Length: 213
Image (cartoon, rainbow, N blue to C red; front, side, top):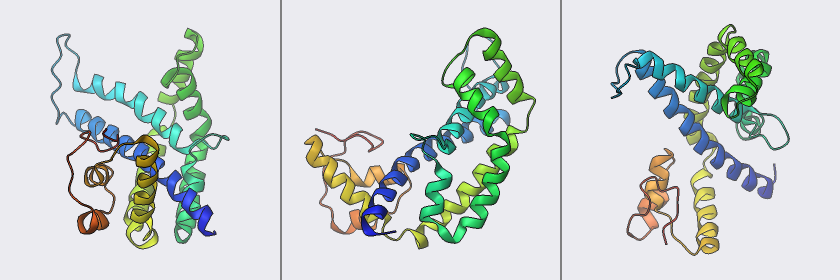
């Protein structure tokens, strides 16, 4: 991979990283609800398990977004294979397992997740997901995620530089500034360069993902 291709791959990875953090947050909330570790105030006698089931819809739709191999899809499997070649065997093994459920996951996203189809198609998609082994696909993907995130420090030593270069360009384009420290904290990214070289400035949005005027 030449320098220009790697630059664009790392920028795609940054977008993927945002969606991965959201996916992990959704999963953590769902597990907390299933284990009855979270109390959600509600006036209509909904149980924690009910809330967890609602979040299953979101989590499955997010999974479909991450692994979608269509032309405009994020295709995490392909991007990970490019950026983490030493983990190619593990990535391929997990994809081979997830692929068995891909059509069901995609249909669920399109008909009952991010979109809502006509009633027969809507409830058919929900039924097929509940009757399948998609929970295993989610678990397999999460396990692979842990491997990839752990490998970042050694296999993506240029990630923080790539993030800073991209934010430099976005600040010029938007005539705004990002809170670099908060941006990296929110995404659990390395923050060595910000701590060492960046001058202090007022915080922008809490997540740091949006530039401040």
